[in-house]
Image (tube, rainbow, N blue to C red; front, side):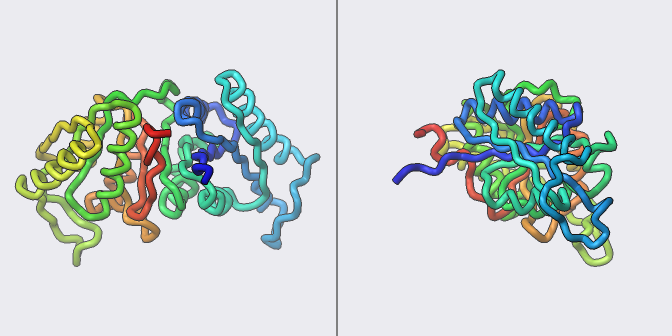
Length: 296
């Protein structure tokens, strides 16, 4: 049987703010020999009040902007020796990306919309894609230099079962790139949006120790060196602080019910918005993009 070729989806609106994401995605595709599709969504809702989307209008200015956006990725791919399939569709951008995610192994996206405002600050496209995507999502901030580096990977964990797929995914990435891993657990008392009355949950050192030991034990199975780190403080602040010393953060979510990390959605959201390195978000039921990569 012919092995499945990995597929990467790059959503683009043509803005300069997502150039870093494009560069990282193309370099990753070159290393992993993945197929790449550049997707731009012609959001015709402004002139389609009925909510029905007709076939792409090749003469409209919006459609031409979308074509220019995907062709820009094609051109960048050609420079790097990576073939890119251009794809322009009509519809709602969020729905189009989420629907397309079923056919891909990884989405690599930036944090800028046509308005120049962060998608995550808008609270719409990127958040919903991360929540509902059928595959992992790698978010690359516009300030990132666009160079793919995976020498040091940070895997935050609180020992929750929902983080285990992200742990294994992160270890697969580490093995593929021969990277070191830091397993970070934050010992703290924190307000929980999910506890009755917004009460306080405690993560004592013992819980944190078991969480990082699990990552270390799994790392040995993958042949990956894992450095355990337990620190006191605010989970989001400590993850962000550590992000400056790492090339990639791999973290989990609670699946289609919404963003969850350390049982506090704002931690994941704050990390994705403000981390100093790209953040790879893995839903609790994701399959592994890098599984078998070293044997391919």
